[in-house]
Length: 287
Length: 275
Image (cartoon, rainbow over all chains, first blue to last red):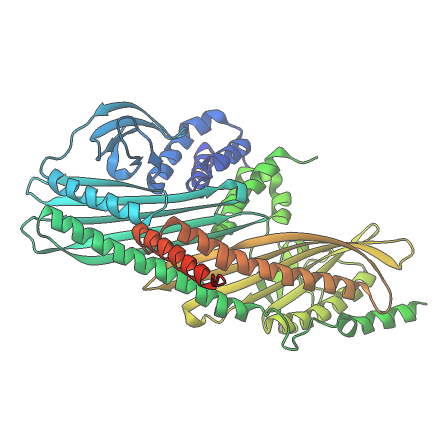
């Protein structure tokens, strides 16, 4: 009989499963894992960590009091101790990773040096999200270093959940730039990710990601924000268009080459011809 | 009686990314080892290919031609690595299995124009059961890697007269597409769909089991192919385009208004002139 699994191995496997939950299905995966593990104590201790990591990776949007916009749960807003920062309202809050709820909202501190840049970008970026994303949420972070270097990070999340029709999907993007205000240009780095899950009588998933590097002109806070969003819009349009083109090639070429709709004769198979004779001979022999 | 843990396991496998089926399944079996046999037979995995060196032909591996760590070749009926008392179909069934492999090989060539197929049969109390497998890999053109796996499990219940039978078919088609390109980064579209069918049919010289099963499998695979086409290339694409729009909402509003204006103008033009 096999040795029982060590606590460490159980944790590794369970955390792995939780981290792989498709968009909108964390609870279902969690409940499945709970039913398989049958150790609520271990689950409570170890699954919390995996859930936290999953939420930060997925850019889960969260409603908080005192804000007209949702805030994203990301590593950039992680204050430690399950508290997160909302750069838009400059508040911190406690986040329950399993219930996905915010509580204990308190005023927080913003980076005074970065704030003019962050605020300008926040306004432009939010406007961009509204124009191009259905159900989109953004959090824009700004920080500075003692030598005066500014870092801006804009995160986007957009999802559609439709469990009734057995599908879910999520888009995530993260755009970041670091610069000295005196620089003329700086590198704008983007990571784009899309995941779609369809599961009616099956399990089909699209997992796609792309890394982008663009050159951003650094001028005034407002102009830089506009240029930032212009580059983001072009790059994300290009990505989305390329995905659509791939779909076209996959369906019209790759898929067709895997299996034909019908044999080259344009008719279904004559099974009597293919299969009949051997067995018929056998039956005759038997009688 | 269904094991509730088996339900959890199967639900989990329907949600985790199919791109990682093998590692997910092996982790699952580690977690609930008492479900190992059930999971290996219930969870479809991409088919592996082996070479029958005796006849220089490939064959496909699955749980149904496995005994321990050995697999039985449909061409020579031998286990590899050799197993002196490995599970074997009866003599009568083996003859049918040989015919089935030959017929299905032709089916494979006509629809797939390449690839590998294998048929394995096993005896049941009132008939027999079988699995029909196909694997076809794409040639990588257009920088897209593609692969198709078919797994058809059929249960045949022969009526006592021997002149009719009840056929139950469970078919899974797996489709894997991957590409890495500058414009779209890495794109991985993969997974499977499963369908079932049942028929009663006469069995005789003009419609032997192989013909009845063949027709069922052909119709089923044609249906699944259409559904795969819809789900993979329309449905998931529509979901992506439902998350983000390349044109701005303002553009969309303007375009919708323009459409309405145009429609109204056309409608007015098509009205009979008022005299």
